[in-house]
Length: 196
Image (cartoon, rainbow, N blue to C red; front, top):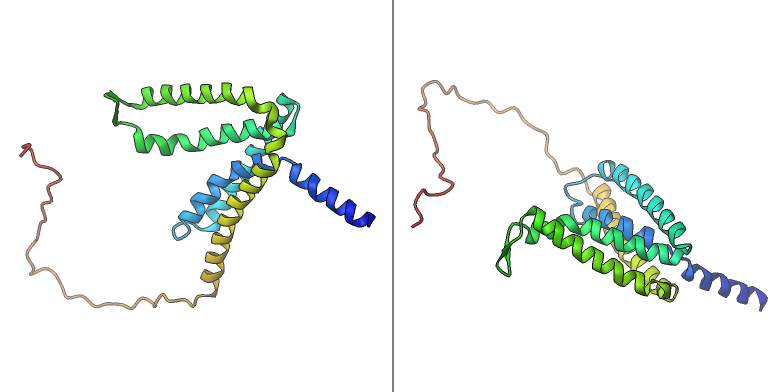
C-alpha cells in the first residue's frame, strides 16, 4: 500500500515538474527535421539540435531564476521561444504585402511584431502567477508534439536503413562527337516589358 502511494506521489510530482519550456524550445527544430526528412540527414541536424537544446536550457534556467519559480520561468521561456521561432515564418507569409492599406516592409513588420510581443508579455506577466496549475497540461501538450515528430523521424530513419540500395551503378555512356552539330540556344523570357 505504501509503495503504491509513493509511486503515485512520484507520478504526480513528475507531472507537476515544468519541463515543457525545454520541449517547446526544441520542438521547432524537430518539426522542421520531420517535414524535411528527405532532404536532411541526422548528421546535419543533430549538432543544431544539441546547440539549440543547450541554449534553450540556459534560457529556461535564467527565466526560472528571474521569476523564482520553475513553472513561471518555463511559461515565460515558452512565450519567448514562440515569438523567436515564428518571426521568420510569419514575415515570409505577411512581409512585403499590404495589410489594411499599409505596406508591411521589414521595419514596419518588426515594429508590429515587437508591439504584439510586448502586449503579450504584459498579459503574460499579469496571469503568470497561476502558471503552476497549467504545468501538467503544458507538459502533456509539449511532450505530445515532440513525441509525434520523433516517431515520424525514427520511422523514416528505420525504413531508410531497412530499404535495399536502389541506386544503380553508373555505366560509361559513349557519346558521338559533337563537332558537326549546330549550336542551339534557348531564350527564356522571365517577364514581358509591357503590361498587357
